[in-house]
Image (cartoon, rainbow, N blue to C red):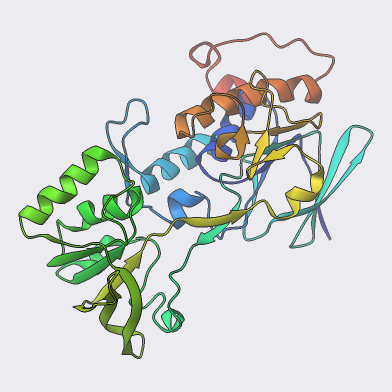
Amino acid sequence: MKKIETDVLIIGAGPVGLFSVFELGQLNIKSCVVDSLEEIGGQCTALYPEKPIYDIPAYPEISAKRLIEKLDTQIKPFNPDILLNQRVEKLCVSNSEFNISTSSEVSIKSKCIIIAAGNGSFGPNKPPILNIGEFENKSVFYSVKDKSKFKDSDICIAGGGDSAVDWAIELSEITNMIYFIHRRNKLRAAPSNVAKLLELEKKGKVEMVIPYQLDSIVGSNGKIDMIVVRDLENNIKNIKADFFLPFFGLSNELGPIKEWELNIEKKGIVVEQSTCETNKKGIFAIGDICQYPGKLKLILTGFSEAAIAAHQCYKRVFPDKHLHFEYSTTKGINNILS
């Protein structure tokens, strides 16, 4: 079994987990990152790498993929251990230190744990269509990694939330036609984006197939010929399409972390807002996974929580040292590493 000894174990390599590496590094704290996905970035990389993000300070617009690339560059000077394609499993506590084993038989010893697991281990909620597996990753996709794949094609998009509406707007710029399928007349997405979608309908770029429910997929050898939908009166409509993109949200779970006796409410981990510490001393939770009154699930909120948790970790990693706070403009990066 491979063994790693570090100051802080970070669970989750999404944007908030990666920024934790930087905040810890600023304090001369070593870190190790574990993630169940095959590459860093969390949902940003796995689900919407080309989707623009508008609420990152100093970036009027930045793609999710580009944000992760920037964060990766930012943490490189601190040389963290990054373990991918595995998840944390068993936790043992001994002499105020944590011993964690992963699904790839790696043993990690740390003084603190920061859980930055987003929505936990996740996967897409799939439509209840029996033969959908035959078309997955061929003509049915649950995320968009390369939008150029859909250029000059006819696409069915199903769902009523932000992801479905956002991608319908984004892909309308390069596709022939988008058929937007939803079972209700009302959409749950941001009103401004719903207005944009309806404007695209007027321009003939989008056809609203509402209210209809998915019935079946017709095709062969992984290639869709048509999507069959049914209205509330069982009237059938056949939609000829090249691709089908269902956006029904994510199913997620905490996995083995649920067995760590943390205070969990509604699939989130309850923390003390001022410290981001859980009910277990030395274990912190930040980003979308953590809960406290007034919590906002924003990336920038998670960045702030990363800084708070890092400063709390300092007290456990260096119990005999007083932390003299300095701005990054004062101490820089090279002074820390020298």
